[in-house]
Image (cartoon, rainbow, N blue to C red; front, side, top):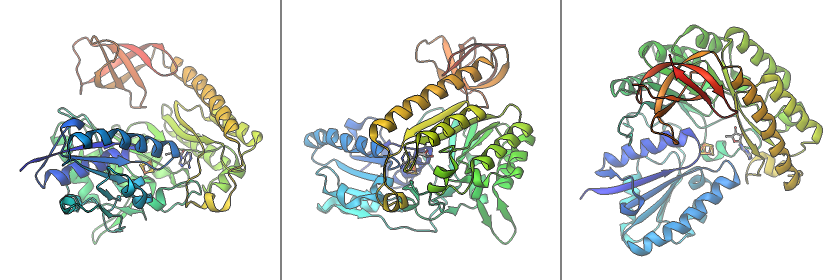
Length: 439
Ligand code: 5AD
Ligand code: SF4
């Protein structure tokens, strides 16, 4: 019998890609993808552990799912992803959870699910350093997808002191460049217009076989040449590893988008050292300067968080100062939450009071909004190529899409539709969006 699996995804883009891999694995074993949680035979929740809030959301969701299980006694519920890896035992104690699988254990998920038929709860959180999900066809659920993700590395070896990822996703490994090229070609054949190469730290991509030794700058050039009609993006870059060769590759290849997401985390050298980030404020600012020289219209975005152990008001001011110097188009901003098991949780005191964290975060957001507004206003009068993603939430007559810098633009539809590339002249700007007209 064909069973229906509903997959819900939390956290980063890597999780979005993983959910498609899991959907592909389940599909190959006779499960069909279900988009309505109420009609599913199996519910899989792909979770994030990066901050405490991300995990709280999942516990709340499980409480809701309890009511579905009351209605359907045969419903199976599983937790996968980083939280599954981190606290498998605790999750299994929750009355609705039947199975748990960590990020390296997805290949055997259909078996794990059927083994729960006899009534036992089961988990698989084994790490497998060779697992890159090579040979698995992802299942995309949207009808006319335009933007796809391809994971090129999995895991992380950096051990930033605050971060749980090296513990939940294990050691870093790179997929074969041949598999990556094949996946990108398959997206192009399906009509996709954009591909994002994913990894916790894409700059450390390295794959060697008998014929070639391929690093990230070479890989991204190979991808760009393979699909010249597609936009190519990548995320995330670690500042310590962003090389001139990569910056040159972006500058020289038209279809590699002029956008770099380069998380700085903090602007204070003292805090960066406590975070084990392995670069200084000066190093970071020099990289930004080189990027701006070689790619003058490069979009820049960042992840930044406040309230890390030992962060004083002066350290925090250095972060705000760095944000102003760089002039990010967009920043994802957070307050620090201790992750059990990390080096920071063991060796550093969480000494910034919660109230101060909140207050710093709101100041940080204010500063970034001002920068984003100024950056967006500077775009007024310029014309950008925009990949149309769909109708604007507010009006059917308006479309929205992204520039290669990854800025969102809203404009009257004219005859354009989702998936088209159009030239849009910017006429208005707020801190969050640009407005324009097709020219
Ligand atoms: N607390 C707050 N933010 C964190 N991040 C990672 N770990 C933590 C933590 N313990 C942020 C970083 C990272 C992004 C994905 O989440 O900014 O780049
Ligand atoms: Fe992604 Fe990191 Fe969250 Fe895991 S912990 S889902 S890798 S953001």
